[in-house]
Length: 356
Image (tube, rainbow, N blue to C red; front, side, top):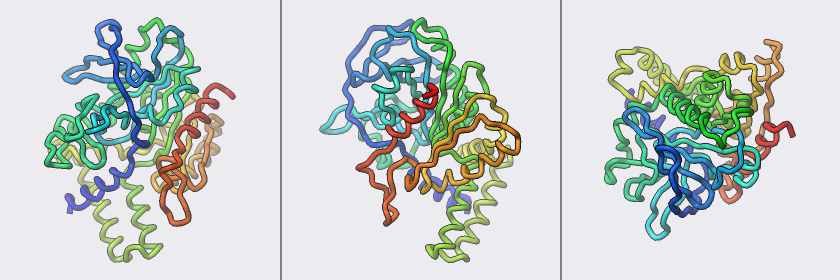
């Protein structure tokens, strides 16, 4: 039963990928301190930062560090998706990390945009080591065989720790303005961004895209209930599924069980509600989500909590008929992936962050 539910959760997670594939090329630049930066696609600078037993690869979405600007850290969503892939017949492609979601010409007028790699995931992965969802797998013949070190590290604390290490490094750079820093995150990355904002006084704005204010399992329970209400599945089937979700949560609450199951460790880590964290923050918070996104639909209730606490630091933006990645959804319920919505969404956020 546990395997059945974890498999179901895995299939759900595969739908949370960010953005379309974008062509990229790479040339070499000089060095910055101990790192060996590289310009990628004439859009970004790669920095490798040693960190414990891993290396944190991150991208600065600019090609010049001559202008002193604050940082906009974008925290990507879930799954071990490399920032770039070497695809047969095409070369190097940008496939993840968040930079493909940004109108870089607009964003870097005000910020140094930064995205961070997933733990124990190569910066560039050959196509032979990518499954159908562009996740990095250690065995090309096994589409779900992720690096065990990644699975063990796939927790909220790990991502926050890595982000803080990158921010500490950036604070020391002469081309970084220490004032006016912004952190944003999409989906699972919204939880990371929230904790980063709570962990450092340098962040002055927080952006949350397609977030779930509560946990993770609640989303799957709500989706299952809706399937029953719409006649997609029988109530008998959904009743069993919801019971399994609850039992899975109970299993993941046991530290001894979590210690032997990385999947349950990840589930427990990202199932903690975020609403109390948001209410504790005094900085301006911006939430954007699509009305067709089941994971984020409880964001409709968030303003009620802020009103009750007498707080006025929330800006909420609904995107009508948009899904988890802000593609428009047609009458048939299918997203139109020929009409990406991320540039519009992020540009609106950048204008808000600058008070415009």
